[in-house]
Length: 99
View 1 (tube, rainbow, N blue to C red):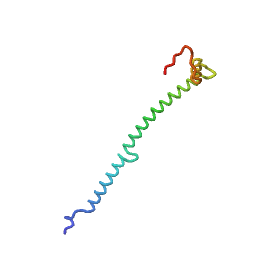
View 2: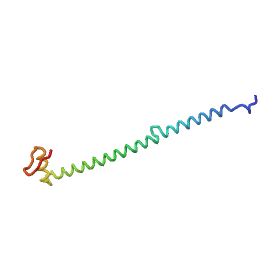
View 3: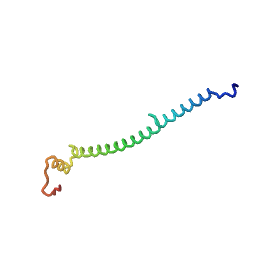
């Protein structure tokens, strides 16, 4: 048998190995821990967390406003009256209670 007519087994192994590695790295780039799908998931999670942060910052600002309005430096008598009636479970004579 002539050496030139024989199929090159080494070439076949090389290309098979190269195809396998290319497939593995392509899969890892898309599906892996640091792949494209994971990056999209992290971006979506970050957006949700940003919206939760904005809600919490608004709540903190509201609570700071209420705290200021009940502080010694600035006392909002209407707010104080509302809070006292809420805690004590009382109503004024001119109020209507709807249940």
